[in-house]
Length: 233
Image (cartoon, rainbow, N blue to C red; front, side, top):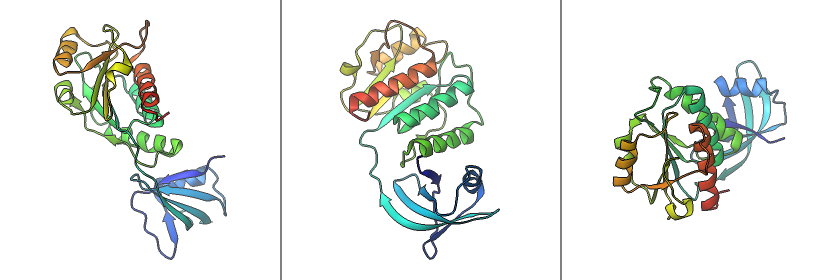
């Protein structure tokens, strides 16, 4: 069984002991963490400590630090520009994108978006943390505030790609180097005006096969293909 992970952004170590409280402590209790078990703590920027459980009570879990290490950042930056879609689907995109290796998520409003994303940022950030813990990504992906397509179209990246079912294009040709910014449209698809605006901005176009995928499926499949092309997977 994989070692349990705790996200602890500002760990305070006293006499080689860390006192884990709050939600992370409750998660350890619920998962039946035992005395003598080792747990990982990471701060989201590459610093990881391994601690042995020396006490579990109602208010805290105490860990004795037995190892420290620094994990280098991801070799390549993969930025997902995801159009706002129905929240359950959007949450699946966040979770799976983090697992695959996306390093930054930029939600944006498209013409056919059917959600505003208002008030969801805290929930989305929690999903990112949980996905990073589960998949052992020790550098926490960045979540940008909700923006619009015009703003995201001006973002700089070495490779800028739009996945669209109404355009032809080869992924290997579109990916020149990293960082990679890739855009996924809403459930209703891109408008012709949006595609034309992105083409003017210099984005390359890629089609994910002959069949039409749901927005959340396309986001995850595209992340995997990009990560594979870059050698991350």
